[in-house]
Length: 396
Ligand SMILES: Cc1cc2nc3c(=O)[nH]c(=O)nc-3n(C[C@H](O)[C@H](O)[C@H](O)COP(=O)(O)OP(=O)(O)OC[C@H]3O[C@@H](n4cnc5c(N)ncnc54)[C@H](O)[C@@H]3O)c2cc1C
Image (cartoon, rainbow, N blue to C red; front, side):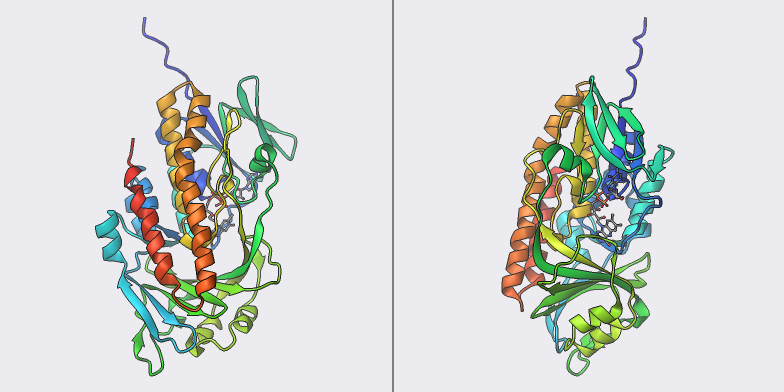
């Protein structure tokens, strides 16, 4: 008699951010039953994200590269100018280097575009909005997530993809004590037709739209890259040294006036561009040590919940995407031995994510010491180091 097929393992994912959704796609492709639980009543958006060749390779393995290319932008170059006069510090190709050296493009995208793409790819897996998870544990060999409204959800595995302030991380691995770095950043977007096309003392530096560029100054830096399908908007990260405590949150509102006041004395063309920015948010940058463990029984962590990392190398979304792929692959490989898969998962991932966390910290310290230059130059080198390693991340 033919053997009854094993029932598909059920995975409950807490948090429908980039990491939770990417994991859901990978798990569904692996034949798992997936259910997502998201605290927000509507899916929140954010501003720009960078998707390195490592992240693109995972999305390629999930069959999403073509759609990604239709929803993201590929900057052709990267350049850096001085904060006051807008003089050129360096300029180098990005598109060619990334494709030739790393075998995949370096992309920029609006977080909402990547989020929507992943959400479509998740298909008809149940996604519960307004589901505020307050904990998850292993009970009689099952994984059970508990919610603020008193409800529970049972699965074979619970994945805490609940972001930088993960409730599941706090429950199993203790409250963390992030250190404020005395650096904050404004995040905002400006329409590309408000971006200057020439800067520099005599307008001698061309600023062709479609390039990634940074302004480096004495008390911070401004990183700009195009987003949107046609690169018709510019994403701005305005880093600023401050002793004023700023909350670690993606949704603390600020204003263009506050941004302009902080950058008083900077290049006039830059300040003029700031007069047109939309939806300004501010965000305090915090530092944490890598966690020693991610898995407790049938509950594990992924993305920012597992490895909150400073943004210096722009690898947060990429690491989260990689995590989901590796977790799905391990669960598929280990069949019913769920706990073995969940223990191997951090053992496989942590050397890489710890390295990124620590390199991000090191680079952050270098940046602070080295302001003014060199700045982007080194960041870029490290980003290259990060992506070079990902040759190891191949489809199973
Ligand atoms: C609103 C928002 C805007 C962002 N904007 C940017 C940006 O502009 N640029 C950038 O580089 N990065 C941004 N990020 C961060 C970036 O998306 C992540 O660092 C990265 O993609 C890692 O993804 P993640 O899935 O681990 O975490 P996140 O993308 O942060 O996703 C975590 C998800 O879990 C949900 N959640 C949290 N707690 C609970 C709970 N208790 N129960 C259920 N659900 C919960 C959150 O609402 C969120 O949807 C933003 C994140 C958020 C949440």
